[in-house]
Image (cartoon, rainbow, N blue to C red):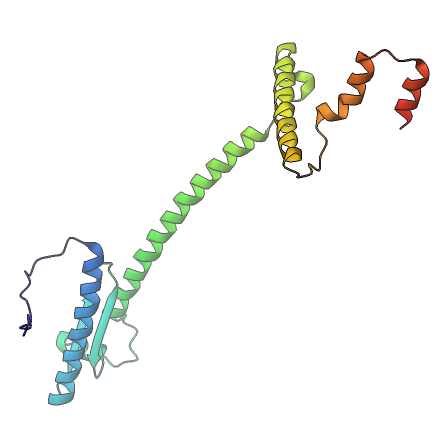
Length: 197
């Protein structure tokens, strides 16, 4: 028969793994609050616990309330309608403000990055008008367009061979009748009837 291991002693030192640290904090905080509640119920004790998580969030438990216990401890027995801010509420608000500021900073950095990316894309979209291109630039543009047309035509041929109809005409296939007419001699009657179709 196998013996149960029972509880193992763990080394009490700060954890390095952030995920384990958060999980352990949540579990132990719940256990601590449960023990405080039991102490209050069994003994009638007034109990207050305030804990800041590793991510700087405030968690508090108190019976009858955290505020009344803190006021009793600090010696500030102000009536509840006083205008003085509660230190626990202020600490909680500050933690929330820090968290919101951190999120805002991340969003602002992301927005700047996206704006720069958008500006870069806009700069790429601006094309010089064809009238302002030099002869050399026009030749390069013409060669690029012809190369792109040949690639589209190859793809169209492959699609047709596979039995898939290519829905668009390529420049080469659209000009094919004209090229055929230029390469073969024809009388003027055929040329005029061919253009009428």
